[in-house]
Length: 208
Image 1 (cartoon, rainbow, N blue to C red):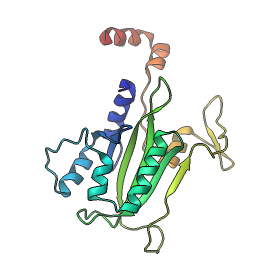
Image 2: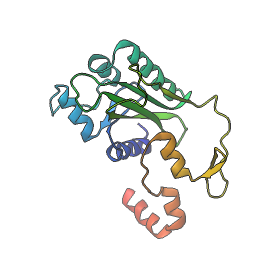
Image 3: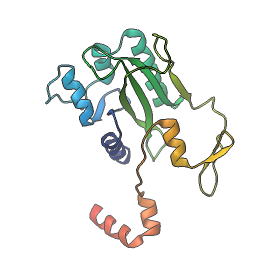
Image 4: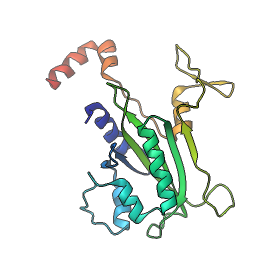
């Protein structure tokens, strides 16, 4: 497993709101947060249930989603791993054993391996809502974000703001609006080495 991608996915799983988990390319669960464990117990699973290594798609097929919705979700996640889709967001009826709302939304986005740019994991957030935005009883439309058909997205070479809708939007705000995630600041090893070389030497010594 790519260690840097694995560390990032564990950190994000614990930080993001909602019931969050990560899966690998085989669809096996890598890590889950406490909210996800609570949902598992609501479904009748033991508090000691071992989530790591569980087949996410099999679990969703048996407990949560009907066949048509399951097929949509499976295809969407596979397309993220193949690099054909950037993110996925879909809203589905709440299963009977959960009483948090009438609908829940699944949002998925990739965690990339820095060494080759391939998608190592997909992070999935399950969030619960009281109602859909329209009055129709049918399922709310799914938002699909494909990587290949998208036009070039202008980004400032200096400050990294994104040009969208006639305005320059800070990259942090753009990611929050497009991916619906909360961001937190960290600093990567390369920037530590450049900005704080004295700390970089200490960290390298600890790693050895």
